[in-house]
Length: 445
Ligand code: PMP
Image (cartoon, rainbow, N blue to C red; front, side, top):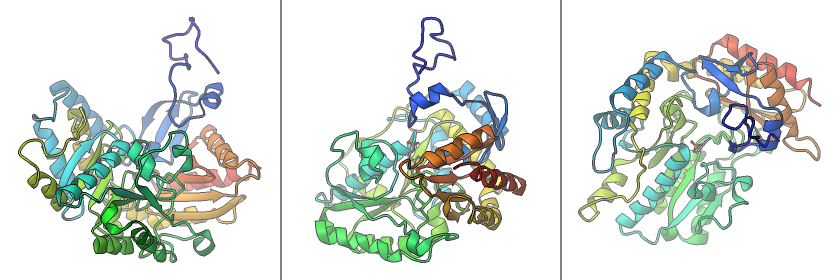
């Protein structure tokens, strides 16, 4: 590892000081791969070559890179109002952004709390759920339910309800009073499903097991990703989310959809809630909210949830929660320009229009070397590779590195290649992505 010397301190080639997140720092620093520019569907790598972005950055650049209207809006806003607090004061664009965002949400989820990231949105939603239960006299409901293989960011709330052991085991006891549903991945019954798998609605009954175990009167909320992305593209079985909703309703439990990756067109609608026809009580978002140009997250709350907390509070501050940068002026400018762009280019509808072509391409890898499953929904694809004996995840990592060098950015998680391209992509890009992947899979052992 380059430990930094007095020679290059403060220079871009001093790789020591930046402690990279979710990275094998030693591996990266021995062979750094970097981007220096981006435009539309492509990055430019520091080495000079173009890299086709099949992952929308990190599932976030839904309208493509460096889009002029967003760049201009941020530039203009930066020259007008660099920062304004939203604690007891505000600026008009924060209200406009909330109102416009509410218009994209399912009917009734029209109260918006701003954050700066998906992780903050998750912690905010969990806190709102707890505060809500307390405000309606259900203060014994303190338990939070997540799901195995769930990813909800890296806050203590998020890793506690999350179901990824690697993200949990370094950090002690986490939140107490958390339990987990079983995950919905069932390759024996659902391998190579296109769209929603046919089998597995029954897995929602696992919530009844937890209700029987703990008592409904102890449970505040359940949080799930409608489509789990970070653990390898797990699409909800037909009927599963509907059944979860019913069980939550029967027991007074709030349902939270973590839509940090699924909102803003990824599954062809503004939200996965709309796509699957199930309305949760809270939706967490980030990423595509600003096309990732400026960090921003949000929680959309059902109006009754908001009203219960606000109306039942003693005079004064109703919810003791917020971030210095909640509703940051530059983030609001980016979000508003992003909403305009989504509408002007019909990008959510575009995802629907391309979905079949995309799914055909994803599933064309069935039978390619090492492939044991392909999954798809909207403009999301998951290609699962057989783990290398004694070296799980290494094969997918090799594909990741080789793809980068061949001019293609994919994401790998475990032994799964996850794809989530900008929604502006053309069929020729789809052909290129899967042509390259098919060639690359033949080169790995
Ligand atoms: N929730 C989900 C479902 C996510 O996919 C992510 C990020 N991939 C997060 C939360 C965390 O978002 P952030 O990295 O912005 O904190």
